[in-house]
Length: 308
Length: 191
Image 1 (cartoon, each protein chain N blue to C red):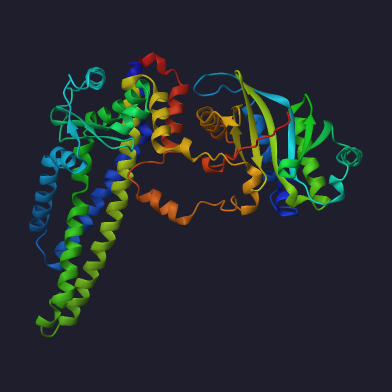
Image 2 (cartoon, one colour):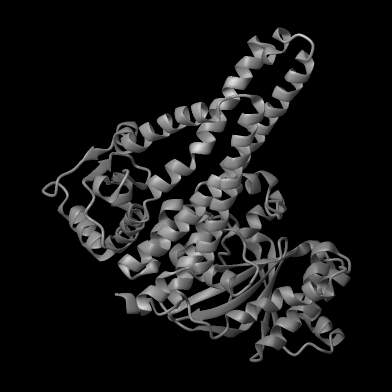
């Protein structure tokens, strides 16, 4: 009972629901635009669904191929397999079908697969070399939480609107280049039809960017939820916090120079955050590491040992 | 008031923020650090770091401090000064068992320095604390009005892991905290 009450973050859940509702509105708006433009929305969405379904069912194979991750057996990596098996049991999900390692120095990890039964967890050699066992457990817990929360499914299908809007944008762009939106073919009200199509084009672009923004927001919320769920699995939020600090290279960014040697270089005068950073953070799929670490450490301050 | 006056050489419109920036460091007192749960003890000594110029104030630091103390009737802390030739800088030490008074004194002294035309010379205010076994300095950069922790471990090295942990703690307490890339070192802190 206590575990349940601690594991819920109602504020985060509400934010995700609101973001989902806003995405629904974007879907309706796109559907309406297609109707106005005279295109068949069913046809366009069927094409979009086909593209997303391919991505959804092939996600594990595509990602493994793209990253060059190699599947490893229990005999080859007993510690990693043991850790994943144990945390999967704690999380109440089947052990992922594939455990893989990417021979990359950059510390990173990912989980993919359309369902817990078809899941893959992959880590880089850089991650294995840099993190201690506790920190690695924190990262694995986070990735397993993605599987448990079915984030691949949620994010893939949520991005359908971006796929459809992107497809439409390209289609309308080429139509405008070669067909003049068909205006020249329509006698009498050709100009009006062209203006209508231009309006649809602009509307599709707006929906595309708003949807992209909403999906990035949803993704950041799912990351925070995975941090929380992963911390519950391991029983130690600080493990993941420590790993995140190492992965993000925060330590590497702390300078060794003396304050007085840089003082005259006006190094500190860029006090307000740059505008570009703010936009980049809005479009980012992950929340800032500082925010994630802060939330995890806040969890650590509570009595998280009760979850062990 | 002293801090921003030192920064801008004039009175700021926001008096609340002026007086509160330095005193935010008092929030760390008796807090528990996040990871190891050790209690933070702020020590009764701190310093103001200035870069030296040919201004008369730096010719004889001891007598300059004596004169300053006479002018500043509200100054409760014991003052002492030392020069750091390697960095052309000067340390003015404040000792006071009442930490809130010590912070007030640094503020007053900073205002006094600004009045002497030395606003641009002020680099940082440094506060010493003990967190478990670790001596931790809290450096308030006067250019940015933000704090960051520094945990020296000898031979010019620092414990970056602990610094990050303590930095998170101070930020969580609402202490204005520098981004990590500005956590510059101070190699010759004399206290």
